[in-house]
Length: 298
Image 1 (cartoon, helix red, strand yellow):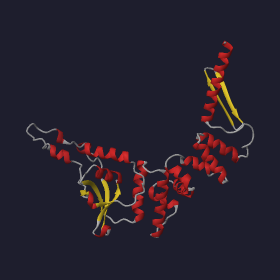
Image 2 (cartoon, one colour; image 1 turned 180 degrees about the vertical axis):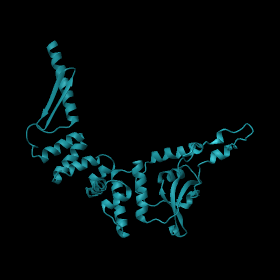
Image 3 (cartoon, rainbow, N blue to C red; image 1 turned 90 degrees about the vertical axis):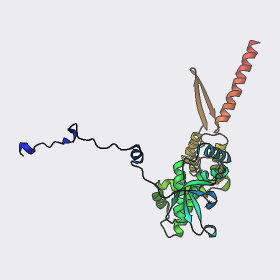
Image 4 (cartoon, rainbow, N blue to C red; image 1 turned 135 degrees about the horizontal axis):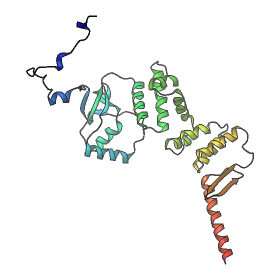
């Protein structure tokens, strides 16, 4: 390589004083730089939109009113998603895909229209349910039973359409573990009264998973009753563990210790007791100590 072309210089930064500088971009150019128009965005009148059964079935009225108040004071912060169904109500309607709460709140707020993103491609029932389920899983808006019913509906819709419909297939489509789908759908096999407790949050799915480790209906119902009476999840787990290992009747069923200011208090019982029972017993014990103290002082 010759010395003449060993280095290449860019003379653009060595302009003479008379060389004009490149034109500056206007404020308008800078504002639109990197911005692209979304062509499927629109404001649609509320009476042109309909709602169909959603994966989320419970809507808190107080929360809807708060959202309606927010819409009136701050405006709509996020569009809902809809798709056009030519057969809806005879003449065609936009059907809600995502944003049922915002739609209901907009009606409550007295709006005439709402900002939407329109999904242009036709969708099957299974695809609609999947989109709704994904949104609600991300937002953690569904209770455990609503989620289970949504998974079940996707399976049924995909089976009707001749598509793969196992828990593994659904999990792959949505992007979650197949174990989560299996555990969720299994909730629907619970007795109606226990299922209602799971739906309203009285019993978490983690306790139900412990319950399923027990063999008999009586044992399962007792576990649920114990949890509702105040037993902690740790106590429930330990109880199931003892039953599974055959040590359920060996020795005290409850043994706890508490240390306060160097004084250790130990609680034992021949049966398993709840934290509420322990607290009540300790209050009674304090009363006895105070009573003994007054007697001696007299």
